Amino acid sequence: MTRDAAIEGLPFRKMHGLGNDFVVLDARARPLELSTGQVQAIADRRRGIGCDQILIIEPAQNDGDAFMAVRNADGGVSPSCGNGARCVAAVLMDDLGKDDVVLETLAGPVSAKRVGDLVSVDMGPAKLDWQDIPLAMDENTEHLDLVVGKLSNPVAVSMGNPHVVFFVDDVDDVDLEDVGPTIEKNALFPNRTNVEVAQVLSRDHVRMRVWERGAGITQACGTGACAVGVAAVRRNLTDRTVTVTLDGGDLEIEWREDGHVIMTGPAAETYSGVLDRGVLA
Image (cartoon, rainbow, N blue to C red; front, side):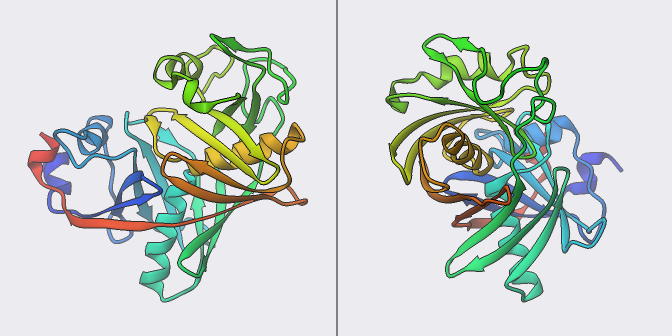
């Protein structure tokens, strides 16, 4: 049996968190291995289902409720995904009849709970050391020596995946389509990086746009919003709890005194179906 035939007829959910969209696959009952080509085919917005990331729910490896594997639209692996964690947590809470779950990820365990109609996720501690981002050399992560076009002096943060945050006067004046790929692949970031531009509106409100590693411009990025909240506090631009407005809507971000970052926002299912061999061709 070919790899394509093995996953033909596999159920999927199309979900999104503020327009950051996902194809969610359940591999708890049987193992699922997707090739780079299969990921790209499913994520293709013209010939496939279309998504920013594919989220695969796998059996827990330790004490969590399940393991969440994340594949970017280009086929690459991502250690974690904030908006995706809310979506998978919502699925698991419905399946298990619980109001709180623990997701295992390559970046570590993520706990989630219902908050009314929203899902709140403890994304764990932000990592700020240059080796944790990681950077290619020892630099002050609060003020990186990096200039790309009009962008300069960013903050580097790891939320289990690398982020670089540029504070600007107007996020809509930044041509992310142009500078995003250049910054993502800059030699300073050996594992590439996600790129955020952020505009501080007040002590409790920030506007941001994002270029996601392996996906390009997206409507929202949960770990990116967390990174922006952390970066703004490090620069003393905001308080520790902020509303982050993305292209797709608002997330509430709190960087607690213990270092953990709490993200609260919606998770929605758009439709469901089964994978067809035509999608994978």
